[in-house]
Amino acid sequence: MLVFMTIIAGFTEDKTFRPKKFFLKGSKRDQLHTLMVKTLGAGGNLREAVRVPAGEKDNEWLAVNTLDFYNQLNLMYGSIRELCTEATCPTMSAGPAYEYYWADEVQKKPVKLTAPQYIDNLMTWVQAQLDNESIFPMEGDDFPSTFKETVKTIFKRLFRIYAHIYYNHYKMLETLQEEKHLNSCYKHFIFFVEEHDLVEKKEMAPLATLSQKLSGGQPVQAP
Image (cartoon, rainbow, N blue to C red):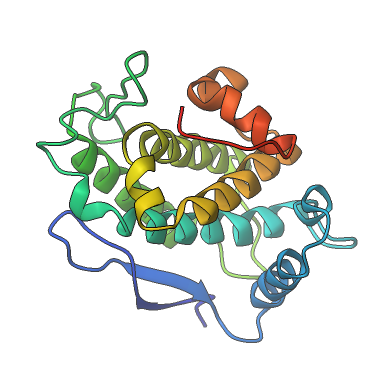
Protein backbone atom coordinates (compact mmCIF):
# COMPACT_ATOMS: atom_id res chain seq x y z
CA MET A 1 0.00 0.00 0.00
CA LEU A 2 1.40 3.40 -0.92
CA VAL A 3 2.08 5.91 1.83
CA PHE A 4 1.19 8.91 -0.36
CA MET A 5 -2.04 9.85 -2.09
CA THR A 6 -2.75 12.95 -4.18
CA ILE A 7 -5.19 15.81 -4.48
CA ILE A 8 -5.19 18.68 -6.95
CA ALA A 9 -3.23 21.77 -5.97
CA GLY A 10 -0.13 23.78 -6.93
CA PHE A 11 1.05 24.89 -10.34
CA THR A 12 3.00 24.13 -13.48
CA GLU A 13 4.47 26.49 -16.03
CA ASP A 14 1.41 26.26 -18.28
CA LYS A 15 -0.68 27.32 -15.27
CA THR A 16 -2.31 23.95 -14.81
CA PHE A 17 -2.26 22.45 -11.33
CA ARG A 18 0.39 20.16 -9.92
CA PRO A 19 -0.63 17.20 -7.74
CA LYS A 20 -0.22 17.92 -4.04
CA LYS A 21 0.76 14.86 -2.06
CA PHE A 22 -0.38 14.01 1.40
CA PHE A 23 -0.11 11.05 3.73
CA LEU A 24 -2.34 8.00 3.83
CA LYS A 25 -4.94 8.65 6.51
CA GLY A 26 -4.09 6.90 9.76
CA SER A 27 -0.50 6.12 8.78
CA LYS A 28 2.40 6.96 11.07
CA ARG A 29 3.43 9.90 8.91
CA ASP A 30 -0.14 11.16 8.83
CA GLN A 31 -0.13 11.04 12.63
CA LEU A 32 3.17 12.94 12.77
CA HIS A 33 1.81 15.52 10.35
CA THR A 34 -1.34 15.93 12.47
CA LEU A 35 0.83 16.41 15.55
CA MET A 36 2.95 18.99 13.74
CA VAL A 37 -0.09 20.98 12.56
CA LYS A 38 -1.66 20.83 16.02
CA THR A 39 1.55 22.04 17.66
CA LEU A 40 1.97 24.92 15.22
CA GLY A 41 -1.71 25.85 15.46
CA ALA A 42 -1.54 26.01 19.25
CA GLY A 43 0.78 28.99 18.97
CA GLY A 44 3.46 27.42 21.12
CA ASN A 45 7.23 27.79 20.96
CA LEU A 46 8.22 27.44 17.30
CA ARG A 47 11.72 26.31 18.28
CA GLU A 48 10.16 23.42 20.17
CA ALA A 49 7.71 22.67 17.36
CA VAL A 50 10.45 21.95 14.81
CA ARG A 51 12.25 19.43 17.02
CA VAL A 52 11.81 15.70 16.53
CA PRO A 53 9.02 14.56 18.89
CA ALA A 54 10.12 12.33 21.74
CA GLY A 55 10.40 8.71 20.69
CA GLU A 56 10.17 9.43 16.96
CA LYS A 57 12.81 8.79 14.31
CA ASP A 58 14.73 11.68 12.74
CA ASN A 59 14.24 10.54 9.15
CA GLU A 60 10.47 10.09 9.54
CA TRP A 61 10.24 13.63 10.90
CA LEU A 62 12.35 14.96 8.04
CA ALA A 63 10.18 13.11 5.50
CA VAL A 64 6.93 14.53 6.90
CA ASN A 65 8.24 18.07 7.08
CA THR A 66 9.93 18.02 3.68
CA LEU A 67 6.59 17.26 2.04
CA ASP A 68 4.83 19.90 4.14
CA PHE A 69 7.32 22.65 3.26
CA TYR A 70 7.05 21.67 -0.41
CA ASN A 71 3.27 22.02 -0.23
CA GLN A 72 3.44 25.34 1.61
CA LEU A 73 5.78 26.90 -0.91
CA ASN A 74 3.91 25.38 -3.83
CA LEU A 75 0.74 27.18 -2.73
CA MET A 76 2.57 30.41 -1.84
CA TYR A 77 4.24 30.72 -5.22
CA GLY A 78 1.01 29.72 -6.91
CA SER A 79 -0.63 32.85 -5.50
CA ILE A 80 1.73 35.11 -7.49
CA ARG A 81 2.53 32.75 -10.38
CA GLU A 82 0.73 34.83 -12.99
CA LEU A 83 2.91 37.81 -12.05
CA CYS A 84 6.19 35.87 -12.24
CA THR A 85 6.64 35.69 -16.00
CA GLU A 86 9.48 35.50 -18.48
CA ALA A 87 8.99 39.23 -19.06
CA THR A 88 8.93 40.33 -15.40
CA CYS A 89 11.51 37.82 -14.17
CA PRO A 90 13.93 37.00 -17.03
CA THR A 91 16.44 35.53 -14.55
CA MET A 92 16.12 33.43 -11.40
CA SER A 93 17.52 36.01 -9.03
CA ALA A 94 17.42 37.16 -5.43
CA GLY A 95 18.44 40.77 -5.82
CA PRO A 96 21.32 42.04 -7.97
CA ALA A 97 23.97 39.99 -6.17
CA TYR A 98 22.46 36.52 -6.54
CA GLU A 99 21.46 34.67 -9.69
CA TYR A 100 20.76 30.95 -9.86
CA TYR A 101 21.46 28.63 -12.79
CA TRP A 102 19.68 25.30 -13.12
CA ALA A 103 21.45 21.94 -13.01
CA ASP A 104 20.34 18.44 -12.02
CA GLU A 105 21.11 14.79 -12.75
CA VAL A 106 20.12 15.24 -16.40
CA GLN A 107 21.13 18.87 -17.02
CA LYS A 108 24.61 18.61 -15.57
CA LYS A 109 25.93 21.88 -17.02
CA PRO A 110 24.26 24.84 -15.25
CA VAL A 111 21.99 26.79 -17.58
CA LYS A 112 20.40 30.21 -17.27
CA LEU A 113 16.60 30.11 -17.12
CA THR A 114 13.82 32.59 -16.47
CA ALA A 115 12.48 32.50 -12.92
CA PRO A 116 9.23 30.68 -13.83
CA GLN A 117 11.17 28.10 -15.85
CA TYR A 118 13.67 27.61 -13.02
CA ILE A 119 10.98 27.30 -10.36
CA ASP A 120 8.96 24.87 -12.43
CA ASN A 121 12.07 22.72 -12.92
CA LEU A 122 12.81 22.96 -9.21
CA MET A 123 9.35 21.95 -8.02
CA THR A 124 9.16 19.16 -10.61
CA TRP A 125 12.54 17.90 -9.37
CA VAL A 126 11.44 18.01 -5.71
CA GLN A 127 8.24 16.15 -6.51
CA ALA A 128 10.27 13.50 -8.33
CA GLN A 129 12.35 12.98 -5.18
CA LEU A 130 9.20 12.69 -3.05
CA ASP A 131 7.73 10.18 -5.52
CA ASN A 132 10.89 8.05 -5.58
CA GLU A 133 10.42 5.27 -3.02
CA SER A 134 14.12 4.49 -3.06
CA ILE A 135 14.63 7.97 -1.54
CA PHE A 136 11.37 8.48 0.38
CA PRO A 137 10.43 4.86 1.17
CA MET A 138 7.07 3.61 2.34
CA GLU A 139 6.63 3.38 6.08
CA GLY A 140 8.49 0.52 7.65
CA ASP A 141 11.18 0.55 4.98
CA ASP A 142 14.72 1.73 5.63
CA PHE A 143 15.76 5.17 4.44
CA PRO A 144 18.86 5.25 2.22
CA SER A 145 22.14 6.40 3.72
CA THR A 146 22.00 9.43 1.42
CA PHE A 147 18.53 10.48 2.60
CA LYS A 148 19.54 13.52 4.64
CA GLU A 149 21.84 14.78 1.88
CA THR A 150 18.89 14.66 -0.51
CA VAL A 151 16.74 16.52 2.01
CA LYS A 152 19.48 19.15 2.34
CA THR A 153 19.49 19.67 -1.42
CA ILE A 154 15.70 20.00 -1.42
CA PHE A 155 15.73 22.64 1.32
CA LYS A 156 18.61 24.53 -0.31
CA ARG A 157 16.59 24.76 -3.52
CA LEU A 158 13.32 25.63 -1.78
CA PHE A 159 15.12 28.51 -0.10
CA ARG A 160 15.87 30.00 -3.50
CA ILE A 161 12.14 30.33 -4.20
CA TYR A 162 11.65 32.17 -0.92
CA ALA A 163 14.56 34.46 -1.81
CA HIS A 164 13.11 35.19 -5.24
CA ILE A 165 9.65 35.90 -3.83
CA TYR A 166 10.97 38.31 -1.21
CA TYR A 167 13.12 40.27 -3.64
CA ASN A 168 10.76 40.33 -6.60
CA HIS A 169 7.18 39.82 -5.42
CA TYR A 170 6.88 40.96 -1.81
CA LYS A 171 5.04 44.16 -2.72
CA MET A 172 2.40 42.17 -4.56
CA LEU A 173 1.95 39.87 -1.58
CA GLU A 174 1.44 42.98 0.55
CA THR A 175 -1.24 44.10 -1.91
CA LEU A 176 -2.86 40.67 -1.60
CA GLN A 177 -2.46 40.91 2.21
CA GLU A 178 -0.51 37.66 2.22
CA GLU A 179 2.82 39.00 3.48
CA LYS A 180 2.13 37.90 7.07
CA HIS A 181 1.49 34.37 5.86
CA LEU A 182 4.72 34.46 3.83
CA ASN A 183 6.69 35.67 6.86
CA SER A 184 5.12 33.01 9.07
CA CYS A 185 5.94 30.24 6.58
CA TYR A 186 9.51 31.45 6.11
CA LYS A 187 10.08 31.78 9.85
CA HIS A 188 8.97 28.18 10.28
CA PHE A 189 11.27 27.22 7.41
CA ILE A 190 14.38 28.87 8.87
CA PHE A 191 13.75 27.45 12.35
CA PHE A 192 13.44 23.95 10.89
CA VAL A 193 16.55 24.42 8.76
CA GLU A 194 18.57 25.62 11.75
CA GLU A 195 17.34 22.87 14.06
CA HIS A 196 18.29 20.10 11.63
CA ASP A 197 21.35 21.73 10.01
CA LEU A 198 19.92 21.52 6.50
CA VAL A 199 21.27 24.56 4.63
CA GLU A 200 24.67 26.21 4.89
CA LYS A 201 24.62 29.85 6.00
CA LYS A 202 26.32 30.99 2.79
CA GLU A 203 23.39 29.58 0.80
CA MET A 204 20.95 31.64 2.86
CA ALA A 205 22.97 34.85 2.62
CA PRO A 206 20.44 36.66 0.36
CA LEU A 207 17.93 36.74 3.23
CA ALA A 208 20.36 36.80 6.16
CA THR A 209 19.14 40.12 7.59
CA LEU A 210 15.49 39.18 7.13
CA SER A 211 16.08 35.80 8.79
CA GLN A 212 17.68 37.48 11.80
CA LYS A 213 14.73 39.85 12.18
CA LEU A 214 12.19 37.05 11.94
CA SER A 215 14.13 34.93 14.43
CA GLY A 216 14.20 37.85 16.84
CA GLY A 217 10.55 38.72 16.39
CA GLN A 218 11.33 42.12 14.82
CA PRO A 219 9.19 43.84 12.17
CA VAL A 220 10.20 42.83 8.65
CA GLN A 221 9.97 44.26 5.16
CA ALA A 222 11.18 43.23 1.73
CA PRO A 223 15.01 43.06 1.34
